[in-house]
Picture 1 (tube, helix red, strand yellow):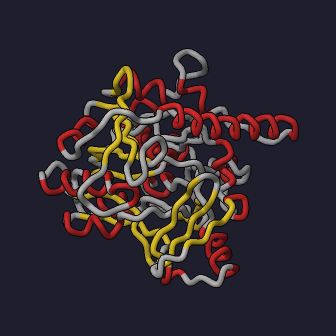
Picture 2 (spheres, rainbow, N blue to C red):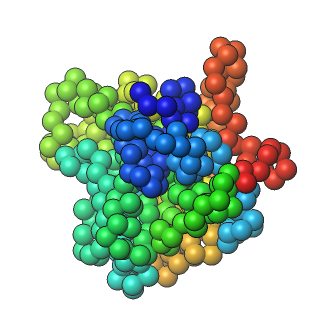
Picture 3 (spheres, rainbow, N blue to C red):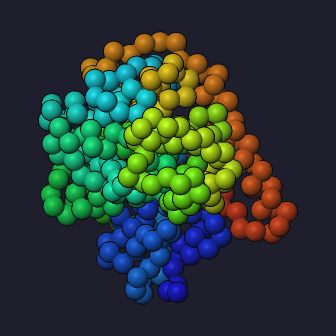
Length: 345
C-alpha cells in the first residue's frame, strides 16, 4: 500500500465512498475499487486536493454557506414530472428541461448495466429516462472528470449527500484549501441531491437476489420503504427483504446528512404522497425547478425530520462507540458552524 494521507480516513472505515478524491486527482492516480486507493506513488503523499475536498475531513459548510446563494430558510414542496421515473420522475424531468433549454451542456447521472451502477454523461434530453430508476448500491461520479476532459463546460450533477458535499467543496476550493491552489473550473451549474439513509454493497445485493432465486435481468425496480428493501420483478412479483440483511457502506455510520443539505435542491420520496417526490429548494439556482414542475405545498416535514433524526442517532451511536473503543474519529462536522474549530485555510 502506498503512503497516502487519506489512508487514515479509508482504513478507519470513515470513508463515505463518494469517489470525489478520484475525480479531482490532477495526476489521475486515485482509483475507486470498492474504496479509493492509490494505483501508484503520490509525491505529495496525498497532502493535496484529494484530502482538502474529502467530506470526511471537513464539511466546509459554514464557509460555503456564507459565500453561496443559500436561502435563509429552505422551501418544501412535492410534485411529479412528465418523465417516467422513480417516485414521480422529478429529477429526470428537471434534467430534461435543463438540457432542452440549454442551461447545461450535459448531466452527470448514475445509470446502470444490469443494475450495476455506472457513471454517465447525458447530453441528449431523450436519453435522460435511461437513468431514471434508483440504484441503492455504492456508486461514483467519475463521468464528471470525463466531462471536463472532453470539454463539456456546464453540467448538472445528481448525487448522494456525501457526493454533493464533496463537490460543493470542490466549487469553493480556493476558500477551503490549506495551500495555494488554482480555482476549480469544472463548470458545475446545478447540484441535485438525493435523500439517502445509507448505501449498500453491490455484492450484498447480488447475494440477496441469489438467496431468493432472482436474476438481475428480471428486476424491474428496487425501492426502500418502512425498513424493507423492496424488489419488484417484471412479472409483478414483490419480494420484501429486511434492510439489516443487506451489508452497507461502513462510512455511512458517521454521516449526518439525510437530505443533501449542500445541494441546490434535494429530492426524495420521504414526506410526499405515493408516486410523488418531495422537493427541497435550498438556493436561488434551485428555484429553476419551479419553471419545470407544478409544485404543491403540504409536505410532511415532521416525517423528514424523523428520518434526519434516525440518521443523526446512528451517527451519535457510532461516535460514542468509537470513543469507547479508542477508534479514530474525524470531527469533520465542526466546520458546519462558524467559530467552532480552526478554519481550513
